[in-house]
Each structure stands twice: as C-alpha cells, then as structure tokens.
Image (tube, rainbow, N blue to C red):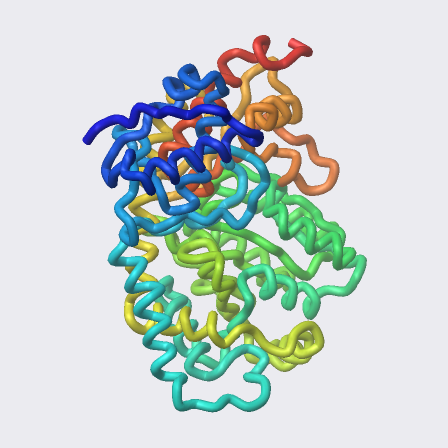
Amino acid sequence: MSIWDANIKNLNLPLYQSIAETIRKGIQNGELRPGDHLPPHRILADQIGVTVGTVARGYNLAASWGLVHGEIGRGTIVSIPERDYAHVPLNMNGSNFDLGIIKPTSTTDAALRKLAYEDTLKNIGLRWKNKAFIGFPPEFGLAHYREAGASWIARLGIEAGKDEVLLTAGAQEAIHLLLTNLTDPGDPILVEEFTHISFKELASILNLKMIGIPMDDQGIMPDSLKAVTKQSQARVLFITPTYNSPTTAIMGRRRREQIIDIAIKNNLFIIENGIFSNFALNPPPPIAALCPEQTAYVSSLSFCASPEIRVGYLKTLKKNIPKLMATKRALAVSGSMISAEIATHWINTGVLEKLIEWQTREIRTRAEIAAGILEGLDYRYSPDGMFIWLNLPEPWRVTDFAKAAEDRNTIAMESERFVIGRGAAPHAIRISLTSAQTRELLVEGLNIIVDLVSSPSKFNPLV
C-alpha cells in the first residue's frame, strides 16, 4: 500500500487536532484508503514544521476516532471501517506517552471484541427482556454472581463457596470494606515498604498508621515482619505477593509459608491483594489458599480484562460477612447489575479466559519490545508483568527525571509515590507497559525515557 503524501496547510491551533482533522478529511475524500501508511512521525514533523510529539498526538487522536492504528514494524496505517476497534482514552491527562497508570491494554482482536462486548450484551439483553427487577439487589450481588466469582478464584487454588465470595465494585471497594471492619482510626497497619498509591490514599483517609516492612527481591522479609509485628502490636497486614507494585517482586512459596507462620503466631490477619495474579506463569499458591482461615483475598477484573465494568471478588471468612454487609449498605446499597452480568457471562462462557490470554500475549510482546529498548539499563521486570521498575543512573534525581519526562509529554510514576511514611525513596521510576494505547506509542515513550537517562546534562539544568 502507498505512503500518504500529507498536504497539511493552514494549521490552526491546537496543531495536533489539525493533523487528525486532515487525516479524517483525507479518508472522506478518498485521498486516504484502508491500508495506506501515514508518514513516520519524524518525517511528517519535518515536513510541516512541528515537533514529533505534536505528530504523535495528532495520530493518537485520529486513532481514538477509529481512523488509524499502529503496528510494530509497519507504522501508522489507515483502518478498515467498522473492523478496527477505535481507541477512546478516558483519562485525558494531556500526555502523548502515558507510561504511568496500570490498566489492561484494550483488546484489538475484532472477533474477540465482538464476542466480549456485542455478543455478551445481546445475550444479557435477551435474558433480561422478560424480567422485571423490583427493589435493590443484595449488597454483594445475586447468588449466581457470587458463584461465578467463586469458580473464578478457584482457578488459583482458592476453594470457596458462593457464601464466602462477595461481589464488589473493583478491588479498591473490597479493600476499603475490609479496612473499615478490621481496623479503627489510629491503628497501625503493616504493609510492604513500597505499595500501591491507591492503598496509601485509602489508609490515609481512614487515619491508619502505615508501617512499611523492608523488602528484598521476593517482597517483605520474614525477620523484619516478625520484629515489627511484635513492636507495633498491629493486627492487619496488607500484601501483594505476586507482582508487587512497583518493584515487580514475586514471593516464592517458602517465603509465603514463613509469612503465614508469623501471622498465625501473632494473630495477624492478612489482606492479600491478587489483582495481578492472573498473568503470572506458574505462580506459587496464593496465601489465601495456604492459610484460608486467616486471610482475605481480593481479586479484580479491572486489571486483567476491563477497567470499565468495575467488578471484583472478595473471598473472606463467613464470620466477617455480616459486618461487611452492614458497611456496604451504609456506603452504597449495591453495585451495577449490568457489570455483574457481564462478568458472570464472561466467566461462565470462557470469554474471560480468552480476554486474559490475549492480554497476556500482548504483555509478553510489549515486555520483549521494552527489554530491547532498555538494554543496558538497570531495571527489573517479568515477561508476564504489566510494569517495569527502572533504576536511574547518577546524576539523575527521581523528581528531576519525572519533571524532565513530563516536559516531553511522557508520564512515568516516580518512586516517592509508592514509599511508606518518610522512608528514603530510591531514584527509580515505574513504567507501565500497558497504558499506551498502541505498541507504537509505547516504543516512542520508551525511547524518550532512554534518551533522558542517557543524556542527563541535555535535559536537566542542574547537571
């Protein structure tokens, strides 16, 4: 197919919108046809006198309209109408290259998207057509929703009946409900020294005293946990044993057993965050499978399939459920039945497995791409993980690096945002492999990161 000879004149502000609008008009008047290639970013930037970032943003906007799509090794290509999925970014933060937030990469397989969305919604509509629902559904979902959730987490070795699994509006609601019922304001709570930003925010709102447990390459260290538990008299431990964010650490089985032994001896209840576990290749058993009597397990479809439907599953002890129900009733009567129906249909028909298989392949491809671009730098990652932990070389300071990246329209998460309390933050950043809408945008964003790392004096006025 031909490469488009762009004829962009009289550019109006903002420039990137003019580029996208010119592409749209070119398709309408037949100048651009499905399969045609757009010029590489650098060539078009030189041709019309704008920055590479402006071209990237224009192409990105055209992609969000469903007009074009990117392919590694082939560039940006005009899409076939009604076949290619249109990327619609919901978190418009103004960044051309968003490598910050962790979320699933939207599935671009047309047949799978039809199965997961069009066919699913039709199926739900047919089932609901002759039903009349009156009143609010149960706080944690109808029985068949919870039964589907129980079957889903059973894949990981966590055995539970539907009476022990609660439907939630994502992992964050489940964690909120657990903390509200297991702690009082001012209580200490143990957590990895690097943990989720959203958990830090929630614990702060609930006025909990977070105590960070030192970590190594497998996560929290048993001796440190034992010492801090006895000193603090804490009753709750929040932990992400598979793919700690941001360090990518995966805790081995022996380490998990050591943590369980300490928890049992010190009456320490464990909240296990399992939101990334669906991607791990042959992971150790969840802590909740090894110690069900002292662990609550949190799972979510938001990170493994689709953040839009906001569905999670909480496996907890039966004795805790009445208080959780009362809290849920006070905060929100019930969740969305449409979202719950979608999740249940996906689980029962195998669609969710297919979505995760696609997502896993995409993650592995992106991880391989990233490994090639970051070769020679000091970083940690897993071939099945959604993010990379990159240590910055001297003389970069992490705050200066984040600002320099932002100045080049690139977002990555600086280490300080994950550190508990006043602990020293390493000069490192977390890079999301899945937040970029296309592989091409990921490559461009990573190249900017490498350019910054390699030339600190060029971008940092303090060097």
